[in-house]
Every structure is written in C-alpha cells, then in structure tokens.
Amino acid sequence: MEAGKAELIGEGNYPAEASELRKDLRLKLLLQQLELNTNVKRGSVHISLNFDSSESNISKEKLMEIAHSYMEKIGFGFQPYLVYQHYDAGHPHIHIVSVKVKSDGKRIDMQNIGRNQSETARKEIEKAFNLVPAKGRQKEKILNIKPVQSSVIKYGTAETKKSVAAVLNAIIPNYKYTTLGELNAVLNLYNVTAVQGSKDSRMFLHKGLVYQILNDKKQPVGVPLKASSFYMKPTLKNLELKFAANKTSRNPHLKRVKNAVDLAFMHNRIKSAFDLDRILIKDGIKTAERRNEQGILYGLTYIDHKTKCVFNGSSLGKTYSASGIEERCCLEGFNTGRAAVEILEDNALKNKPSQSSFISAGELQKIIDSVLQPEFSADFIPSQLKRKKKRKKGKGQSDY
Image 1 (cartoon, one colour):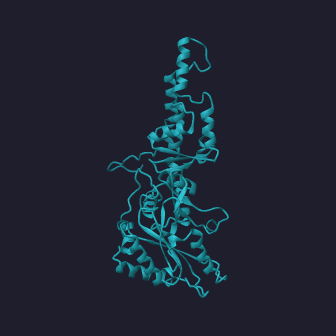
Image 2 (cartoon, rainbow, N blue to C red):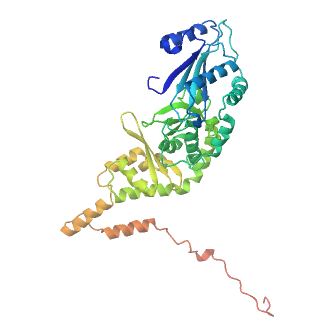
C-alpha cells in the first residue's frame, strides 16, 4: 500500500469501515480474536482471488460482492476479514486476510478446504457474476504459451505465471546445463530465477524449488511460484535428471567456446570481462558474471546460444574461470594478436633486434592455421588396415 501497488477496498464483520480505522487497530481486532484459542498455532488465513486479464474493468463494489459471497460459501461468512485490491501483476486480483478462530473460540477446520469448499464456491461465483471460468482459462494458458522473445519479463506488466512459464518452456528443454547455477545464468537473462532457499530452510532440506521474477536490480520480486505448479513440472528432481544427461551431450561443443575465448584474446585488446562479453556476443556466446557486494568478480558462466550449451568457467579450465580471465586481462603482452603483430612489424622497420622479431604477421597466421588443422586427413588409411582384394577366378580355372 505504501508503494501504491495495493488498496484497501473493504472489510467484513468489522465494527466500522476499515478505511476509517488505523492500521494497528485493523490488525488488533484480528489478533484479539486469535487470542480466544491459544492452541491454534497458525491462525492467519490469506486468500487470493484471481480473475482473467480481460476482466480488468471490474468495479470495487463488484469485487466486494464477490469477496463476501466467497467467504460465506467457504464457511468464513461471520469471520472478520479485510479485502485488498493488488495492482502488482498483469491480471486483476484481490487478497483477503482473516483468522480461523471463531468468536466463540472454536477453530475452523480447513482440511481440504481448497479442494472442496473453495472449488465449489469458485464455480458458483463464476456463474453468478458471469466471470471467465478458471478451468477453461488454465487450458488456454497451456495452449497459448509462446517461446521466449528478445524482451525480458518486467514484473507487473504481464500475467506473472504465464510469463514465467513461457521462459521456462523455451529454456529448460532446449539448453544444456549441469547445475542449477548454470540454468539460472540463462534464466536471469530473461529476469527469471530458480530459488532453493537457504541451506537450513525447510524448502532446501525437502528439495523444493520455486521460480520468481527479477526486477531491474536482479532481485526477486512478487510471489514465488512452485515448480510443481507449472505444466512441464520443472522440479529439482526432474532437473537433476537433465543435469546428468547434459554432462555428456554438451561435451562436443566445449571446444567451440574455448576457441572463441582464445581467439578473442588473440585478436583484440581485452582489458575486462565486459570487453570479452562484447566480443563473444558477436559469435552468439554470452557471458554471465557473478559479483559480490563489493563488486569483485568471483564467477563467470558462458552461454552459447548457437549450440544451446552452458558452461561454468571453471569447467572449461583454469584460464577460462573468473580469476583466469582477469589474470589474462591484466597480463601485459598476453594479447598476442593484433598488438603483437604491430610490435613485430615496428621492430622490423626499425631494424632493431628483438626477441620476437624473427616471426612476421604472415608466419604467425600460418602457425595458427597449422595448429587448428587436423593431424591427418580423414581419407587416409594406413596400408596395414587396408583389406586385400581377392582375385576373381576365371571360368575353368582351378584353385591350384
């Protein structure tokens, strides 16, 4: 509400209009009712009612009617509750906050309430208020998912889950990655991230996984979406199966990335990882940097969009890791390409002796070409391996 992304539009069973009450008083009424039954550990109730993106013109009065009808149908008609309209996503939705302790101190049983009472209430409300059915809308979402486009997701401008699903469908089955970090390197390009939680969290210990949208500062925003809630089930268990398969399937493309990095240093003056990224992107390879709070580079990942392979720098070798790249950028004279050729030609013109003056630019290129050439032709077969031809016997000829 303070950020202007939400608005309190009404209440239920409050002694006065909630908008006229201070925030602390609105909360106090809910807490007082919870105190009537101290055995209830999780007494708060949060409900989100979501509508189709085409129903953005629903009035606040109609939203409150829907909220009242829904709460009554699920057994919360006499409970105190607050209703907020949220503007943080591309589709209209409201949030309802209540408690599951009655005024007489009894606890409201919420076992299977979502599958039973809530599902029945939803269908009845959709008919009564002429709303787009959620069941048909869900099928339409699955059928209309499109591959990821060049533009990244911007939180609040499109329906969150549909946008995330489009990115996951384009990345997860097509790219070859072997860790969650490598997968996130690609997802982050489109402002999506996969989150396991902290190492001591319940989600991490149970191998849970959620997906979130990132803001302009690459920080997670909005409600986390469970991996199991997506149609393609991109859970950690299923991803780990892909990790194992991708380790071998991406190997044939490893040399392409290493050669691209080496040639970039050979023919260009590279002073930073940013310069390297600017050069590699011309060949379809994107680098993803990982920096700490002080801005120090501690990780580098290569994303080859042509072969759809993702490599952590250290998996390519020490010289391709973050520390190795920074060392190559800082080493004076490491860039043996254009800079070295200029030095050699300059020394030759001045007739000054130099340790490197015995080689010319043309000879340097010949050496590079010879190194990159295969050791022998694929057509060559040693005589020892050639099968001896059998002489055909003519008619009437014996074996002796």
